[in-house]
Length: 269
Image (cartoon, rainbow, N blue to C red; front, side, top):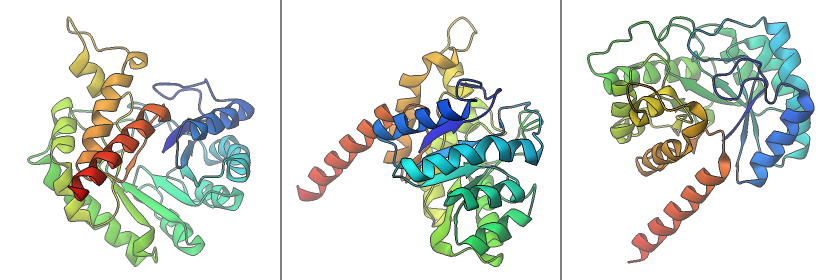
């Protein structure tokens, strides 16, 4: 899943693709580099991010989704928590709604997805972006994230979303410490087995990578985290993730290709 941020303030590439034409060109480049689907977002979900009015978010994403849905040749997802934006994005050609709130911030989004027969990704997050990194604590992060996802997937089914249209995301970096993120990755196979739907993992360029790879008490800058990102991508895929959400698709696509080759060889041995 290639990331197309149509925002001025996303943590890694905010502002680079804010112009709709540049965003479309970037999305097409991600597909050329191996993306199997694209995720278009008009509201930053970085820690401390301020909410964006639905009208502004809709105006950012709809023109980009319309063109990418028509030109890219891959499914297009909208990254939003708002029912109004999800409905407009689906009308523009999006076939998946990627909701970092799992339907808690705007429960109507579940009805929109169900009515359209769209795909739906439910993600775990503590609180909301402005507060999610305020001293996050868990007794067992894998168990508690699993509890949350199982519950929210059940809510989605009750709203009418077909089971085959659901996916889950443990929310790496969304209300987790470095240790929490590493534990979720290390034990991802447990979560995959428990939720019983495809699991999406988004680690790309996130702070925990910078913290692990940094020196002298300073995080590695986000533009130097691609090698670390690739390590987490391989880890997630090896532990059962079905989708990895990344800013640069070529390294991840190559990793998928090589892992598939190794698995095919192992199965034939």
